[in-house]
Image 1 (cartoon, rainbow, N blue to C red):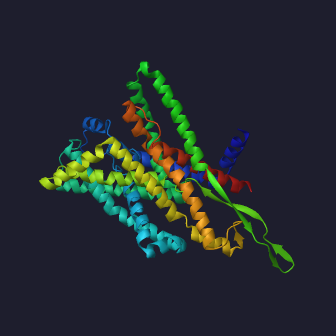
Image 2 (cartoon, helix red, strand yellow):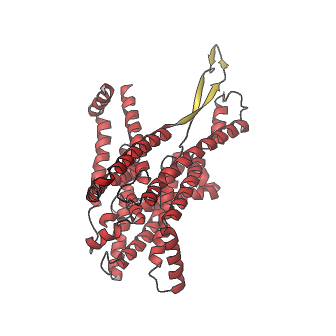
Length: 423
């Protein structure tokens, strides 16, 4: 506690760090203000009915930062940007030029790569916005729109999504933490009062034991998320002695930390986004006049709407994306080359390809455990709801993983900034 107050005092005293934190808070306040400005012609009663017990819209609302539940001008949130980022990451596997730009071209290459992602987000925002507006129009949530009104609303919500993406990047650059993750986190936190009020409304004293059990499970899940997020496997590394003139360099030992959850929360976001996109399209195509398209869309919508099928697909996507994102962001061959250049080696392992193979095998085993854990936590609410039939409360899931991961990352970055000031 004493250390906490000491670091808190350093934050208050340091102008630069204080400015970063205040900038982050100010940007999030602007985001929350934007999320309560609705588009015209919203039927609030129909909107509430549509969102009740709708897993699809609830997940979509999560990535909009709570803006979709208000049908605000930022109702798309950072979803289009996340989807575009996923596509860009996938393209690095198929295009050697993009992979070189992302991994080897330095800051300039990564900036260009990010710019391509921003440009790709615009058509995704237009597609998602058009599908959502038509879906809401068919459910009488918004009044029937003329072509001109449709175009205006589409431009407004697309611009709102791009504005939110820009705010997230400003937070990353001038604030503390990852801006996009913080926007999603702010949306999750903003939904807590509504969730608590809904729980109080359906509270049944006869099920008090079950509620207490859910609280215990929730605490255990949070602890496990923290443990797995922080868990790492150290690989010992030794630096060879080098004699330069009259001085001897090297000879020290350290370790290479391999995280169990190397991909962080990104597989959850990727998997959710991939599942959301076909649902948006199928729900829109259900209302078209062509029988073949309508039948295919209806079948796809029915298939995805099955909770158990949805849970299995979600688990598989999270599991696969954990390996994929780890492979994209962590290159054992490059690590092996860097160790060899610096005169370092893993005891008992030959430098070069043998070192790369050893790191890759260790990382694959670790990633399997991390991917399995992420997949189970992601579908845990669906499993509990399917078994108990209680939808008012949930344990685990996307929101919890994102919230815990963002808080841990934010605390680490603030602590790193404080440590820099201490020395």
